[in-house]
Image (cartoon, rainbow, N blue to C red; front, side, top):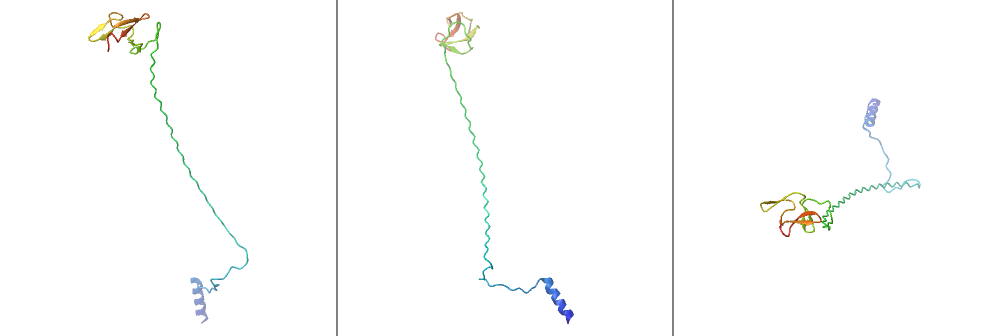
Length: 120
């Protein structure tokens, strides 16, 4: 019989059955110490992307009064006359040599194409 009792106790111990004494549900803890733990985790992720593109396109054309010999640009207008360089110019199926003909005008020693007389 002792053998059976020891066998039953060992089986109960192996299965974890124990006798527990529980306290009533409305029972208060013993002692007066209170422990409070507050955990506040704040994570702020701010991603700011600013893309500023400024494009300024300015086209400024100034017709300056030309006195004497200057640095003229071929194809530009100066005081209402077109500069074609010191070369001949082809107009309405005919070549006009530099400075020869009614379409050329002399301004301070340089010959300009006169657009009033021979408009393009």
